[in-house]
Structures are given as C-alpha cells and as structure tokens.
Length: 456
Ligand code: LLP
Image (cartoon, protein in one colour):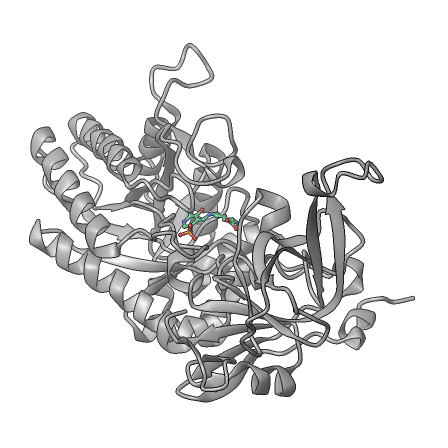
C-alpha cells in the first residue's frame, strides 16, 4: 500500500506501525489492511468516474465488489466514501446489512441464487438483483409476487463475447461459461431473439419486476481498457434495440468490475482517471451514434479498491537451498542453479491465487535491511503440497533466516476472501492499520474454532 515505508532501522512500517510490533502483538501470518490507502482508492474511483461521466452528462454509481474482501468495517469505510456494495451471496449480503449499508445501495449477484437469498434481498429492499438466467426471471417474479409489494428492481446480466483480463478462469464474458445471457444466437436455432433480448422481454412482461438495467462484467485483472468500451457499445446497442422494439429505454447500464492492479514492482495499474475518461467518451459517442440518450451507469471494482491496500506478514521458518537444473552429481557446478526455498508459516490456505491462477507476487524482507548478496528464492507455504507456492521467484537477501518477517504485497483482494482451512490451518486475522494504530477487523481463527465444527 502507499502507507508502506522503511523505518530508521530498516524495518517496514505500514501507516506508521512497525511490522515487528504488529507481528509480536498479532502473530503471523496476518493480513494487514491500510485503511487510509483503501479509502483513498475508493474515493479516487468514485471521483474519477463521477467527474468523467458528468462531463458527458451521465450519472454513475460505484459499487464495491465485496467478493474481493468484505468485513463489516470495510463495508462501513466504502460507504463513508460514497460507494455502494455489490454482493454475490446471502453471506456477503448479511455482512453489508450488518454494516448498516442501506438496502437500496446494495446489489445482489449470483448465477445460482437460492430462493432464500432472493427473498432475503427483497426483504432488505436491495437496489437491484442482477438476474443471470431466464429461470431466475421467473423465480424473482414469483418471490416478488408472494410478497405482494413493490416491483423488484432487476438488471439482466449479459455476456458480450468480450474476453478480457488475466487468467481464463477469471475472464467471464466469453461464451462457453456459466455467467449471464448471451447477446449472440440462442442455443435453440429456432429462436429469433438472443437469450439476452429474451430475458429483457420476459422482465418487461412481469408487473412484479422493474427492469432497471443491463449488466456486463467482462473479466478481472484487466490491464487493457479497450474491452470495456467494446462491451459497453454492445450493451448500448442491445438497449437501443429493446427501445426500438418496445419503446422502453432501460435506465441503467452496469459495466462491471475488473480494473487491474500492480502486483509486482514496475507493473502499472489501470489509472481510474484515464479509464473513466476513455469509457465516458466512448459511451457518449456510442449513444450519439445510436440516437439514444445516455443511461445512468454503474461500475463494480473490487480488487482495485482493496488489493493494493493489503499485505500479508509471514514468519520465515525452514530455509533450504535446492539445486535445480543439471543432473545431480554430474559435477558441472557452473551449469546448475540453486534455488533457496524459504518456507513461511502460511501458504496456499491464505493465498490460493498463485496455485490457482499462476499469479505472481512480490515478497520483501520486512523486519530488517540486509546487505547480504541476493539469492534466487521461492517463498513456499507449510501445506502438504508442492504447488503450495506464494511467490515463485524473488530475490531475497542471502542471509534470510528463521524468525525473519516477510511481507507479501498486494494481497488485500481475493486473499482472505478465498482462504481455506486446508490441513486444519486456522485462517489468519485481518488487522487494520490507521494513523499509527491497529485494530483487528477479523480475529485469527483458533484450533478450537475448527474443532467446534467437528461433532465427533
Ligand atoms: N462484478 C462482477 C459481476 C464480478 O463477477 C466481479 C468479479 C467483480 C465485479 C469484481 O471484479 P474485480 O474488480 O475485483 O476484478 N478470484 C479471482 C477474481 C474473480 C473475480 C470474479 N468476479 C482472483 O483472485 O483473481
């Protein structure tokens, strides 16, 4: 995070807190979240998009995508910065509600929502349910009818065929996957309309539903912003086609999340000002071409708000040099390399992203500076699996040793939120640092917590 510095004796500080004190007080591994940094990112996304869209005459709302990391405090922070909250399950919805986020500022996603989740969202008065299938149109309508109240506000999630972002598994808008309704030909060759158009018409046919918008999320960790413009154009075309056909102009368009961040030194994140300007100019041009007035817009950044604001602190245990390349005992020392395996006290249970996506991270010696010559290191966890790697390749000082602290940067998004208890390892706490003070947002799990679930 931007609050990371080296103190006078070479140890890292985060928002003025020395990581050695943090580790002593909280133990390791620990996720550390820089509140000021997170809030600044939330603010800059909101300001950038509000300014750029106001310039072309459109309103915009920023929803924080809670799947990246959600806790009651974080929901309160983003709300205080003027953001809304996007949830993907009843569980995330419960956190947002516990944080007193007003229902109308919450969205509910999910490709397989349960009836209980739908009912709970309606009871909470959520501002929008993002509907992911034709069957769900009927299910939300039925739930709304059963409540006999105001029509449920829904958006239809469409897939535009635009494929953007990092790993295949996190790129969601290409066709052969589970999310959304396609803009392309229906699987039933007889059908005249695309699945997306069919769903929009179905919503309009239901008095229990209010057709609020069209939603498009094209992927995650996107560093080339052109995909957003292409997808937005397709959504605006669909909106114009629906208006042509029915006279109904969908009031909102959501462009999803996916704004990429820097994980390694030297990488460059998407700049919110730049992308907001480009996207605003592009949607304004598309709308002018199509002869339709601009809708209200929304976006759903998750990673870009919380990712860079977090780091993980680990304690080094075993350090093991391993000879790689060159056959063992072939006597040709020059042609072989040594890799130093640095084991830390966490691993794939607190950061699955390297194992799952081949994601790269950067680690630094955090408790001291060293002028020892650097060695090629691999930071590995304590799990029973050779793929349990946190940092594939990093240069660390050659004297790195048991008891040292390592900091892995940019772990705020999809770290704690995807953590597991593999090997019965309790999940680390999330500790916020603010102006030289610390506060535990989520406490460390204990073995007793885990054993309490085991009924014997
Ligand atoms: N909106 C929707 C509908 C989404 O599906 C997602 C992410 C977001 C917003 C937020 O995307 P973000 O701004 O955080 O990129 N576990 C993966 C990322 C999965 C993203 C899924 N959807 C990872 O660790 O990279």
